[in-house]
Image 1 (tube, rainbow over the protein chains, first blue to last red):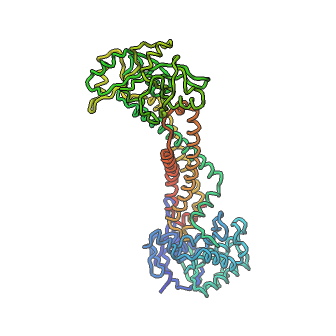
Image 2: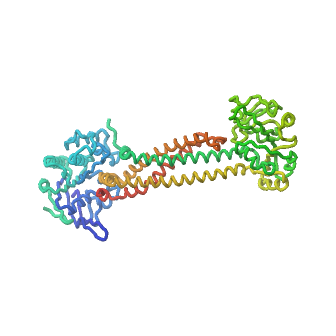
Image 3: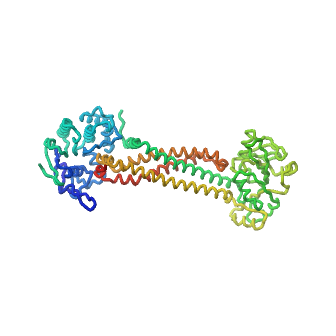
Length: 228
Length: 398
């Protein structure tokens, strides 16, 4: 059984009188535990495809299933719960809230999990500290985002995406601001989480070198998906 | 021990991000709620005082010499000493009018008995003890007997002056010695500075002083009408048959004052409406700005699992905190201003009814509801727009 199944997905945007096709007739099966990379030029539809899988936008036509559950039948709250329980997002831009400390930024996704399922505050704080250590920022737990470099902020966002024990990580150019060594460290961290925790990864990147380290490589071109 | 990070702590952080903007909004709400509290306190006190004076008067009709209607109201509603007289025989003519149940009369004399400049001119009110239903209901403690010759009951303010030694407990009224034996409740009228004596004393007063009154004169007749009788008809009957008198209905007592006050009330209401519109606009503008600058953050939160309800709760919490702080500050400011101005506004200073704790609490609750309500109402439209944004669109906003 596929963990993610995309059936003839098309996503269009209306810009004035014109219709822009971001994703065109894409079908894709992703198995649990896959590590997939998607490469492609800017504007080829990679981010839109990740957003569709993550349920932060809806397809114009076609169906998306997660564990055989149709996302289009979920409604707004259902999709929020899906994102909260199943998905970890890594955005391609700085996505930390500036008024929160690094620790609080990590705790942010845990606020949206229904109460009975939330672990104690102490356990959550320990988990945040552990994840920060794993991305090499254990000493920055009480800092604010503006006290960190772009690369450090990116690593905090990476750590945050694991806070709710996701089944699927959607990473949009997650290593964009990182130097080569740190970039490789992060990819090794992803591989380790993929291997040990069974987390599925779908990673968008411009870096062919990084893409070559994943199990499956896909290319987006003008909204269409091709297998490499 | 680690504390749970919650939506409320996030909301408080948000409010601290722009302290000047938060302070401006709180200050605007404070002013609006303060003006509401002041206006409500003022109007409530005035209305309650006039109602109390009218109710405790005990009479349905007030019969005074022709042309003395205004002077009578001056005495009863405002604190001005006035004297006017008519022939005592009018009592019997009034009694014959259909619908009259009880009558009691009083005679007003003005005497300067203060010992220093701050003690006002006092009314000496001679009343008929056998028929009285006007003075005795105001007695703080029942006397249990009729006033003797040379004894007096004093109004609330006169009693205060006596306690300060500004008026003697044994004093000369029109050359006659008098002893104060009872105190009335505060009426908020000229009766507060009055001294009440039995009308048996009038003969002696006329004999021993140069008071300009004759033995067969009175100032006012208080009338109670029979149950079921039409007060307006009785009043018309009296005025048509006895040309020497004017009649004031109880419900009309204080009408001229109320009419003057209604203009003040209109100004208050107009100011309130303006400040409400301004506050609404300010809240809307500020929350629209807040919503616009947080679109991406909301998109990120939605992507991380926040439901529309979480976004609503977060913003409502901020709105409620702002509304509550502004309203509470406004309640404190408005109450303080109304208490302070009550000492300086002559119209408020002389009112018999002060606002009790319950009334003040009700007004404060109204202020709190109003202040927070304005905040919620002003924030609704930007909040609605924000919560409905698709997360991806929100995230892409710069």
